[in-house]
Image (cartoon, rainbow, N blue to C red):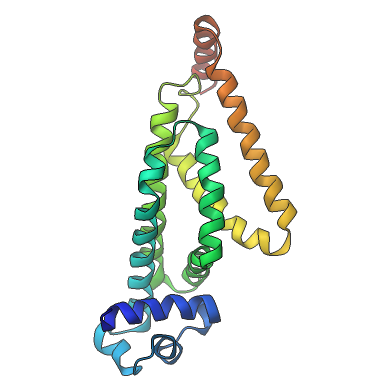
Length: 206
């Protein structure tokens, strides 16, 4: 592992340990096991290092799930994978990193672009799956895969915060999404006449 990689790993560890407010050249260097002067030598500023760490870590995690997302065949399977993803990423502290970066971006506009780019890596993958699942569904006229992908991403980041104070509530939220997926499957099982009627009603509603 080269020095830049050690600094990025040290940044992620510092965020998990100290929160975004506790990240500094000193805390990153301590976590990375290097001299803090190397933060500025390789990245110029702590904010630039935070941005690089956010982009790099998210790209690596999205790559881990890309094949599994491509294999999803229904909304219920997508939600099941979402549960697995949430549990795995929470265990590794990666959802915490993203949530902390989001919090930091509220007061530091320099963090806004990299955080937005990191979220887009997830939402683009999810949007691709939703298009594949919904474009030929009776709900196609009502569905907005782009907006829904962002809602899903926001929900899973929010669950990290919610789960910390109300674990049963977070489980109930995921269960509610499961029930919506079941409803969608029931609509897909309607006969051709009922599906056409539903599509007409959906077009009128929009």
